[in-house]
Length: 315
Length: 282
Image (cartoon, rainbow over the protein chains, first blue to last red):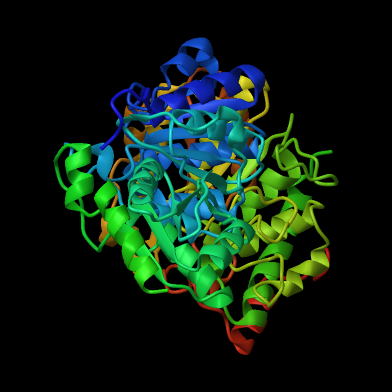
């Protein structure tokens, strides 16, 4: 699926590197972790700033409340655990103590989506984007590679307010420019005139691979990286769709509540357009290798290609 | 300057009047637990907290902080905040009405000075208070963080996560009071999900535990002062505060029934008769 010569790193390592860098730059940044320091790659921060790192134990609800308290006192807390335990498990704590109370907390969530792999459905949430984007005032960001995750981690420290930052477990190709990330600003990855593919997270790479394959068949696919799902870059999306007149959305998330949902809402109001959604269709995940899972659940490169053809046929 | 016992008692009576009048006016709210905590809030806000109510600062730099975890007793909280200068006492008349800053349960969302966190969904305040206490430690501040929880609220699991964290991390600048009134909406706490040996439970978690009669103004004054002196000794502090739900309004006492219902006109008049005006109604 991926080019074997492409350099790969996990996005969670991008988070760890970004957290360390922003820790050096901003002494108000503090970090909390619920017994997953190694998994979240928070060790470098912990070692460098032991007083600003708080080991919470396996107690995520308390971690969210503590983060709200630290933010109240002027700190910029970054919480770290798996996406499932960062959202669904602690939804009410986030809703009341962080979102409704408008606290400057950065909820940083690893192991999101199917590519968590072998651990199975209990550990891999596919509903987190939906849960978080429904909360008023919550910024939702799902970067696509190591560089973008590192840049996003540093950028959210300078954005006042609650943020959900979602990233993953597997090693994944690195293909973005570290300086290209800006919160809320869609990133054009590839020009094209026949169809626009809006992708987020790991699926941006699959969409680029799909666009390459489509080009060989004479189909010109535009790929736009929607790393910020909320607030959505409405202008960039509408401009692109006005030109290509059909859309594919691609994400490692449930169809319900994800990026595709947000784009359909925007288009139905402003520019009704055929949309094909590459996403998990009302199902839990399971154990398996990341690429096997993406293929089984219809999120592979071939699925993006097929969706593009369907979308073009509906123009 | 600290208020005398006589002055505190006058404020308590006025706060009781505020509570029943607020809840009666809008015909909703929680008078029972609010009345039970009138002495605690009065002493805390008038004599204990080192705070700047004239110029509210969310981050509470170099100030003591109070966090209300059981947000449904908002009437007594709002009365205490107003009477200590956070906002005009006259604003109490907007309680629970459209466009008010005095929402049914406290919130920062409407910008009410004095409130630093939303509460209402139970079990979250101790964690928030622990976070503020941890930040004060990080900043080498010597000010204290107070939090109030209900005894029924201790049924929430998150409380015990925070209890463990605070002890393990020696948050000895954290003073958590539990309102032990023995009642909750569905009945007596001992029948719903009772706690035996609450003192030894907190002690087993390595907290310093003291007790007081929350409806005895002098005991509240003495115990809150003592709690401050116990800070800085390596352990968080728990105050088990015995109170009577509905205290000061006889027909609301001795039952859980007045947890969350308002008095009618006749009941209001009777409640006010038992608590004559002292420093003036809003």
